[in-house]
Length: 188
Image 1: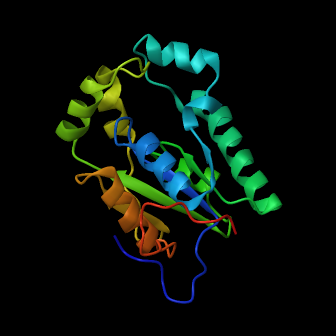
Image 2: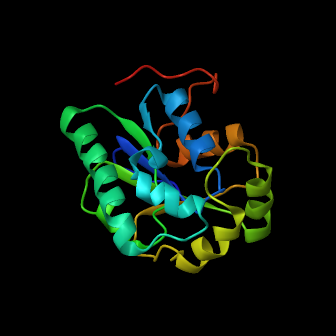
């Protein structure tokens, strides 16, 4: 993980991105809890039609994802406009998706959770009651466009425990934890 450049203010909205099963919900909700920030789960922005399509084992198209991405971008814009910091999950697999939800928005930072296919497939098989089938994982990796050097995306490995990943993210984002890394920080 490359920390934010010195002199750059810490983000007020963090987008936790990655393929399904990479730990977006776990890491995102834990980060928001530790910071005392608002949290939004990307799945809650999907239409029922999208959820049914994925439940049936069909990958979403760019057209399917567009209203979902716009809804997430609206949530981010609301946080920025009202000064309420937040963490939101979003697969943001393609550069265009990351540009739509974060591009040109000062105060927004994307974190891409990175893990190999076998690790993530094992995690997905262990999940219960989630509509996204492990069979769709290959479509996620096929769509994944790794961030270019000109993108302001922090890449975080998902090989360690969630608490460790969150602590490292906080440091890299300039949201360093207090000496007691398990206590939530007051809202700014």
